[in-house]
Length: 130
Image (cartoon, rainbow, N blue to C red):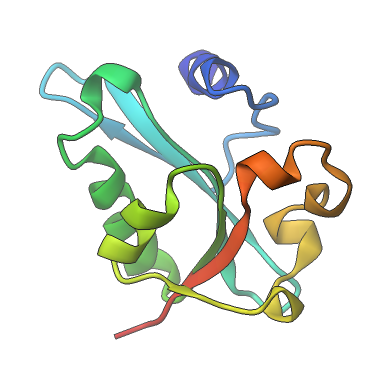
């Protein structure tokens, strides 16, 4: 759990509250190179919150593998894209959805009051089940 929290902190995030539904990606030396955490909303739909790839491993398919793994176990995925990540999610098949369809507790409790909302540009997205 230490590395997961370290990677989250490096991205400006708070500590991950627990290891339940945290999926990790490891390299050939069994070193953690990324993780994602799934959090179910009140309807049982899984939200990715958050997904992090260790900076030296970006561009090697770690994030894609984590999303594919998450979808294999959870089905439909939802998330709030922030910053420059929207293009990454669109390449994986995510589509924008209305804020009214998001579960604020699972997706992002603080987007409405965040002072960085304008620069973050949060976009609710979903990856439909194929």
